[in-house]
Amino acid sequence: MGDSLIKGRGLSPGNATSSVVVCDQYISPLGEISRDGLITSGPCENVNITGKILAFKGGRGSTVGSYTFLELKSKNLAPSGLINETAEQMVVTGAIISEIPMVDMVPLDIFLPGDRISINGNTGEVIIDGVKEKRVATVYLIHKGKVLLLKRSEKCDIFPWTIRWNIRLY
Amino acid sequence: MQLTKEEENIFNGELGEAPKIAIRLLNSLGELGGADRLIPIKSAHISGVSYKNVGEGGIQFLRKISHKVSVPTSLNPLGFDIENGGPVDIDANFHSKQMEIVKIYQEMGVMDSFTCTPYYYYNEPTFGDHLSWAESSAIIYVNSLIGARTNRESGPSALASAIIGKTPNHGLHTDEGRKATVIVKVEEPLDYTKFAALGLFLGPKLNKKIPLVKGQRNAKSIELKAFSAALSATSSIPMFHVEGVTKETGLVADSAEIMEVTKEDISDTISKNSTQQEPELIAIGCPHLSSEELTYIAGLVKGKKKIGPDLFLFTSREVKANSSEAVRIIENFGGKVFADTCMVVSPLSNNYSSTGTNSGKASFYLPLKGYGNQKVAFMGILDLLKWVIA
Image (tube, rainbow over all chains, first blue to last red):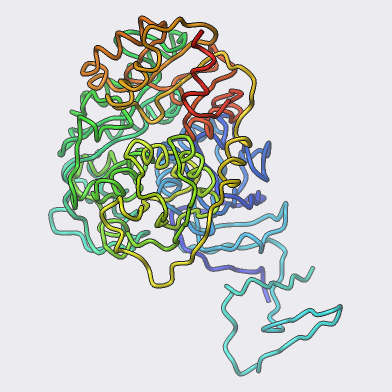
């Protein structure tokens, strides 16, 4: 047992540790992220991303969006790290030229608002501070208030993390 | 991704700092996309010109990467019309920063095209050409309507490719990457604005899936330009197919799902994105107008008396120069035709707080706080012109 470690894909090198802002939306960095570091539409409207690790589904819209990250960086208003479910190249380009660490292939629903996390943009590793991982069940089914837990044999290898069901213990 | 000996030398900085930054960016993006190698390109098109979009951080980056381009390279619009001024008041700082950006690109040997529709004049790809283009609306247009091949490049990555003359071979450069993964049936006959609305409706639903649109065999290229711009503003979709119209409709994935779009989906999208109040400005030309469109609009206003809001049209210098009769008619009516710029990349809110447009793309960007800051009336051109024709 240790801090839970998720293996994504490293896209822009470097390390970042901060609280995570989770935006369950695709974002056009042109227009949907303002020049003072606020998200301007969707579920995260008016949320400030400065110094935070911004986790969102992926980029969309203008191919100029890469420059938004450079502009925020030059004004010290940039997010300290980026996470996407599946990245496209406009956001990745923005991360690389702005030297903001970035990781993708990480499902957003493993984070809770305010989680303090660390990302490694070289290896793709994501660590959620203080969340211990204990792999006890491979599947749970909930039906009419009853819970069925299926535990796999200790002899088996651990289950890949990509299963979306996460049991979190505090 | 495998680099050749020559490319490795560039990677290690033997040709200097700018090519090194450029090829390293291409290498990283090639790895991301699963490319095997870099392939030569016929042309590049660069976005990231308006100071409103590029900012101070962008200028610093452009200075760092400044280097002669090695293939024909066209350029997106900027924040104002260089020769004639407008469409809105510009402060001295914006003006000087904007001209600094233009100068950096000119020194790199990039064309003074200043348009998001370079395929009309400056930079005309043909079927099967490999390109490295930025500008979301132009990428999707040349992939879909011309059958040229470009990934959805960012401003910086298209610039990197322009310098190196190559792009990573993956995605839209391969047949596999061009396959439709969703079939969209649309029964209602669509005009320009309804095609734009279809783009706004589908973008957030499809996200990155390439659609094959069925039921629109009579679609005109101008209407599909409107669809291109709206679809790509609200998604990261690089291409679409239209049954009976585009050239690669045979490329369909076996697993393609099917969806239907109703008349109500289109009308709801229009009303959701529009206020009905009379705007201060009618802005048409996102993407930039073709000669054919300018002539059509001239026909609608010829000899009429102008009232109400300002009427601004946006196109490129060359299209404007080649449509002098239409431009004269529109200006006699009291409208203005601007080159080099548009309602999205100019700081429109310096002078206006509400805009009417037939563009789905503009009606996505203009309302955003801190960016366009406009109340938007999104409707067809005939409805828009009712506000300005006595």
